[in-house]
Length: 184
Image 1 (cartoon, rainbow, N blue to C red):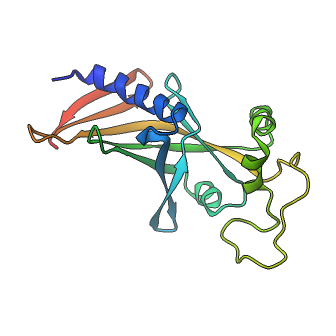
Image 2 (image 1 turned 135 degrees about the vertical axis):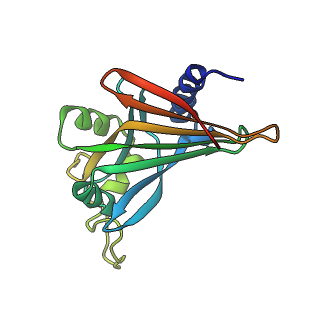
């Protein structure tokens, strides 16, 4: 049986692999915001993992509904599942919106043009597509690009196994991370 510390380190290692390996199960996660009183999940690309700061990053359009939802309620969740390892992660935290900052401008400059195209529409994401919906001409226009940075406060880890499921919880405090075994 793995120790909780080993599991904790493996969680962050697998998240980093997901960020770097396009075929890894954690490349895509489910990012959950609150839309009024209902959860609003969507699949997103994991863009950056900062274990020391307990941060997960994603890129989005500043005009997207998820940005408005996190402006209204900064509490969010991430969900990852690796079917080969039968590991589920539920991660909870608060989000910050980075827009028009040095770091977002650097990220924008390093995005390929095809990666920028999602942020260059005249209409916001979720709008009805009109016949005259053309892309903006300049790929230098980062006005709609932003980064959502989630600071993770709680991780719920579940390992499914015929030999018996295992579950652990990791909670962040000012003194570091506290871990406990839970009944699966």
